Each structure stands twice: as C-alpha cells, then as structure tokens.
Length: 282
Image 1 (cartoon, rainbow, N blue to C red):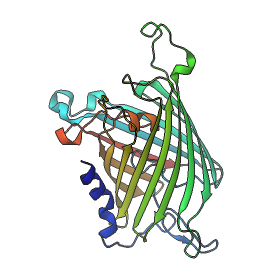
Image 2: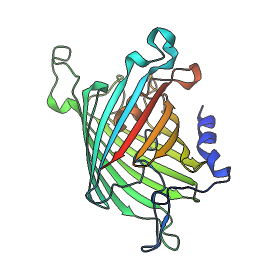
Image 3: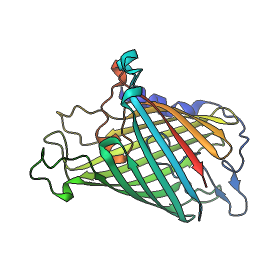
C-alpha cells in the first residue's frame, strides 16, 4: 500500500499540463514577483495547504464525509452515517489567518492559527512555507463512562510546517511534517505525542478541474493500533466564488489529530468514504 500511495502522489509530476482560465487563482503576481496559489483550496483533501485567506476576507468551508461505501445499499452507501464539519477562516492580514470550526465527529471544536513564513518566488525563495497550529476539544467524552475524566483530557493540539512548491502552472506538491498530541489516546499503548509526514500533490487537467492526492505517514503508531495511514484522492471543480472538492478517503474525521491518528478505513478491502468540501469566499 505504501508503494501504491507514493506512486499516486508522484504521478502528477510526469503528466503534461494545460492552461487555466481562473488567472486570479493561479498566476504569478508580477507586482511582487511572488508565485501564488499552489493550491485552489485551503484544504488539499484532508491536509491543510499553503493557501492563505487575504486580509479582511472570510472563508466558509463545509466539509462532509459519508459513511463507508462498503455498507452498501442498506446504509445507502454511507449516507446514514455522515460526518460534517463547519469551518470559518478569517484573514487578519495576508499572512495571518485564524479559524474556528465544529465537527460532528466526537463533537469536536477547534481553533486554529495559520502563519505564512516565506513565499515562493521565480527568482528567489524556492518554496512557500506556512506554519499551521490548532487546538481542539473533544465534546463527546462522557464522565459516566470515564469517572476520572478531567477537562484537560478533552484537549488535543497539532502543529504543522507546510512546505509547498508550484512545480509548473498545473502541478503543485506539498510536504507537511506534523506533530500532534492528544491528552487521551486510544488504543492502549499509543504515545500521546505523535508524529506524521503529510504528502500531497495537485494536477490541473482542465480550465476548471484538478486532481488532488494526499497521504499521511504516521511515524510512531503503536503496533496494536487498528487505525491506518490516511490516503485520499479527489477532484477540484471551480465555479466562480465557489470551489467544490469531491473525494474518496479512508479517513472519515477531518481534524488533524483525528484523520492522522484515527483513520479507520482500508482501501485494500473497499472500506472508504466519499465526501466533499465546499469553499465560499465572503
């Protein structure tokens, strides 16, 4: 599976690219000589991207994951087991974004801070660097089931260094070394502090459409864990002020700690989830 994942992620690098109609999203900013918009969305699929919300702009992202398609017609291919996340992101400045979200998976609340450290330039810095940080709260934990439950047990946090490069007009790649910590973990024996390496790529094959791929390589998962590394493939469709992202993934949750640490699906046996992200700019 690891070999297949790496092949899928690197595939766009070997495919010839085409022109894009939406110049405001994927262009070179001549006035500042910065390469911009390696990715169209704030999310690749599960991974954060180096795209930033501009100053005084508000982005609203609706993310939805159905249940496993493996359940078949009895569950209408996962329709009855859906998970939804609502996320608001505001640009304090062009390089500083804050966010707040709520997910139905474990009734999770999250706040985030996103900082741009460097930008790719055709004649200067070779990559874009963004530092993403999040703090999340698990609202589903029950004190009756966990008598010793304290408030801090509900908390988790994550920090990612997002490194992207726009290889060509139509091909972008990203690395995301990640540290995340949960004060309460499962299964038994799992280290509270966990490490992962995110890998992502995007290939734009038409004026309004692109294929996205991302993968999370967990680096210290305990041997008895039932969870898998998240692998996702998706399609971006642009329509004016909206970006629709359709995808299949083996991770139903959408917060960093959850999709990296608790991806329950398995591509090998068809246990995957269909979902979408809808992004709206205000």
